[in-house]
Structures are given as C-alpha cells and as structure tokens.
Amino acid sequence: MQQTQPQKNRVLGILKSKVSLAPMAGITDYVLRSMIRHYNPNCLITTEMISSEFLAQNRNQTDILMLDNSHHPIAYQICGHKPFMMKDAARRLSEVADIIDINMGCPVRKVVCGHDGSALMREPELAYDIVQAVKEGTDLPVSVKFRLGYSANEMNYVEFGQKMQEAGAEFITIHARTRAQMYSGQADWARIKDLKENVDVPVFANGDVNSVESAIECIKQSGADGIAVGRGVLGDPSLLYRIDHYFNTGEILPAPTIKEKIEIMKQHLAQEIELRGEKVGIKFFRKFYPYYISSVANASKYRGVLMREENYDKLLEYFKIIEKDII
Image (cartoon, rainbow, N blue to C red; front, side, top):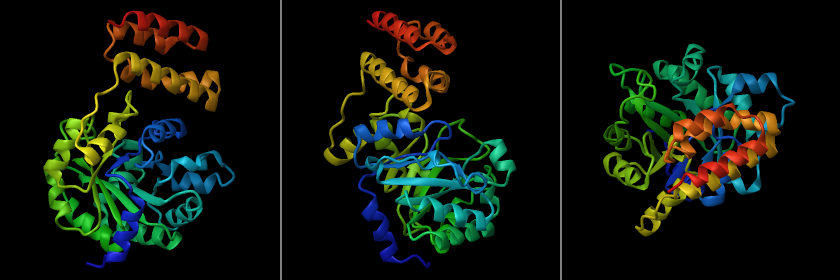
C-alpha cells in the first residue's frame, strides 16, 4: 500500500479525541457545532456537506466559511463527482479547515442521482481520481466518508477503503450500512473490523451510536480507532463529551435530565434566532423539537403546537407549560 507512516501521524496529531461529530445536512450548522464544542473542546467536528458545484457558482458567498476559532479541530466536508471542482473546493476551504473530508456516503436520492455521495462507491476509479484531485488542491489531510457499499450485493467497502488510502486519503469514516438501507435497520458495526484490518489509516465507525453504552459496544465490535456520532447528538449535544469522558476515564456520566434538555433546547433556539433572525430561525429549529421533548409527557401534543408557532415569546410561554408537565 502507498500510505506512509508520516501521513498517518499527521492525522493523529489533529485528532485529539476518539470521538467526532458526523456531518448531517441541515443539522450540523454553525450553531450546533458551537454547542458541541462548548461541551467538548477536543473532538473533531465536521460541517454540513458542501457541494463543490455550489461553491463554484457562489464564490462571493462567505457565510458557508463561517468559523469560530474555538471550532478547531474541524473538517469541512465537500461532495461532488468532478475532480477539478473538488480540487477547487478543497483549495478554497483550506483557509478555514483542519481536514478536508470527501462525502462518498450520502444515500439521499437527489445526491446519488447527481453521481455524488454513495454513487461513487460504484465508480472506484473516479473516486480515486477525486481523492487525488483534492490532495492537489490542499496541503491539509484528506479524509473520506463512505458506507459498506451501494447494496447488500455490492459490499465493496474493504477494497474501496484500500483504494482511497492508495489515492492519498489519510483518515476514513465508515457508516455501517449500505446505501440501499438508507438509515433503516441496524448498523452492522462488526463488518467495520474487516476494513480496519486492511488499511493503515485511522478508521472511525459511524451509525446508531446514541449513548455511551452503544459507543462502547460499537468500539468492541468494530475495532475502530474512534466513533463518529451523527443523529445521536440531536436533543443531546453533550453526548460527545460523555463518550469522550468514558474513553479517557472509564466513567459513565449520566445523560441530561428532561429539565436539562429543555434548558438546552431554549439555548439552541435562541442561538439559531440570533444567527438567522426570528422568522427563519424558528422555522429552521422545528426539526429539533421532537428530539428535545421526546421524554416529556404528552410530547406529541406539545410537538404539534411548537411546530406551528412562529412567535418567539409565545414559544417561551409554551416551554414554561412543558416544564410544569415534567414529573
């Protein structure tokens, strides 16, 4: 294999933690990344997926580069299937990133139909060219995130991972499902061990980690170097810290109480409004309500009310009512 020890060490010098925040479109925005960093100063955080074509067409848009110095270490994730555009995207984002991550795992139909994301697992030669092009566009470490394969009959993740390493990828994150599974069924953590044993770069496991206990089991089954947590942080931005704390000390800290989650929810909403304005911020935040109030009595009733409300002051009043319903 072409991977060298200095490249591996370079990535390990950036990874201060065995935990990372996985990228989620429309979720891991500036605010959520800031909240994750508030709880955990060391974990790697990853941006939402950024289209290389979008960057090429919106060269004067700077909000996508929004970065607080406290966000480091941070990976900026790009997607696309045109090597020259991916190279240009990597060059542009290098000014703010610590790692350039390439999305080869997104299963969403419109992404795959555009020959991006998981579609690249069916075109390993093109994927190889993309990694090399990105390497030409940046001096930063390059990582790749992909899945077990496109379908149950196309599980090429070991060979694909080896090829990405040969192209110059220095870090791998693998979601333990196929593209065909989307997010259904259970993540097959045990399969990741096959990849880990056949590449020399760090491998982080992804999929279905939503507690400290599931993180422990994931590492046990996968043999991975670390864990990338996605949907598990929804409604619980302290999860990465608690997992990291366990890996460092062996102590399992308790999850936030319902009352604590309500307080975190209020802070999260306030920060989205500060960033986006009241009207847009409230609408953007609606996707988070189900996760924050899932353990509250009469959660479905409150969720319906919150999803329709457009006034911040009224939302605060509803939050008070919800808090009174907590036993």
